[in-house]
Image (cartoon, rainbow, N blue to C red; front, top):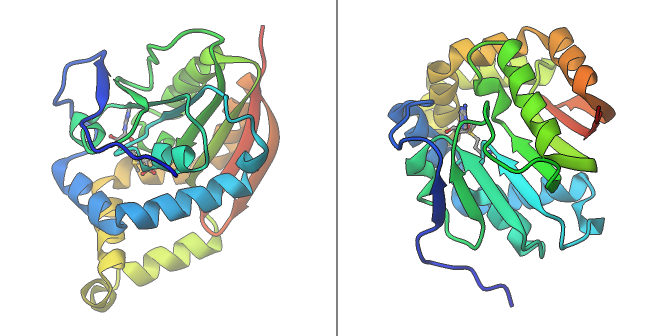
Length: 236
Ligand SMILES: C[S@@+](CC[C@H](N)C(=O)[O-])C[C@H]1O[C@@H](n2cnc3c(N)ncnc32)[C@H](O)[C@@H]1O
């Protein structure tokens, strides 16, 4: 049986609390977009598609930009126990319940040990970085540094495919926003993060070039409005 903790999480604070990477309205929309159980089910399906079923359960895993940590709950339910998460929002980290060690930190300057992790995961974080592609490069250099040789970086981010363009056109219709709560939450999140989101969607070429500079890209799939990539670090 899986024991899930109800006590408050252990958070190592590397930066001061109360930093605003995403505003309170964005956080509120993010929380109502999906329930925790819907998120966990989505993450488990995603991790299975990435092949996590066959990964060593002792793997040391860190999820960067982990938000309220439901990706870590998904990993825990799949049997992984050596888990950490990093996010800049203390209010989101405090919602996590589970055994993972959390770091309140900026993913541009990961305060984690070098060559220490088997797996790094990001699910919808890189597109929040304000200064592109420079911030992407800074964060990829950090991920490469903390991954051990042969480790893997698993990436899920939005990607401008015809489906994404269609989904935004539909959710931004005022009638749909009234009828469909999830669509409204998505529209609010998109509005609040529009600058970084559109910047990210607008530079697919430089994004791929930046990955190729620091990683061997093993898989790069762009379907249904998402990039799903697996990469291993190029160690100097
Ligand atoms: C779209 S949420 C994704 C959260 C989680 N991965 C998920 O899928 O539910 C993006 C997260 O990135 C965090 N974030 C944004 N900029 C950050 C930075 N520079 N360093 C650390 N976290 C950051 C936000 O606080 C937010 O929790």
